[in-house]
Length: 253
Ligand code: BTN
Image: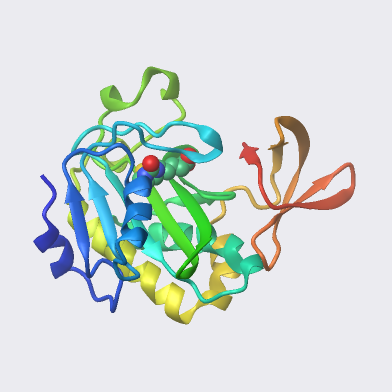
């Protein structure tokens, strides 16, 4: 069982996670977070669940997690930024996750564009950011799923060899509340104060800078060299000697 008291004891944020809704079971915390906008909850309201029956992943995939062992949460933001800067948010979230996990566990994870959290070249977490323009203006839900205390047996058969958890990598059990408070502290600090430093920070943690990768845009694979990200968070990929930029897609290593 997740403890909101323990989570909030570790927070040093102004607004993020100050209002928390904990659900033992839900369909998707992202869906719940959108409902919070309708009920006028304040920016930073956090929804956390021990189990999601219909967790959503990027590119219409499903997000599976082991009940009570992972972190599956979403929070609401009302960013006062130009629409073209939205591509920075997933990168900001990725950097805050790497830093937040490192503060607590000493494990240094890495980032795969646009928003996969990686350890030993396997995925331990993902980010699903959704945005809409509604009554309150530009509104964003940041949804994050992280494998924390899963053992090998908890990883789905089809993801064996491709997914991992903090426990699998270190043999240790982690306090989920401490890890979450550390990530939220890092996120809010970057969001309020260091928006312009995100690109270099993200590149520092990227695990495939200047590597040969396969890039999928609209299911079409391209072989190329990953050359970093633009100031709006788009991927720069050198294909047949020419550098092209992509706002969306998937990198495979
Ligand atoms: C990905 O495909 O890598 C993104 C996965 C995001 C999963 C999280 S879990 C909490 C939140 N609620 C959802 O339904 N999805 C996100």
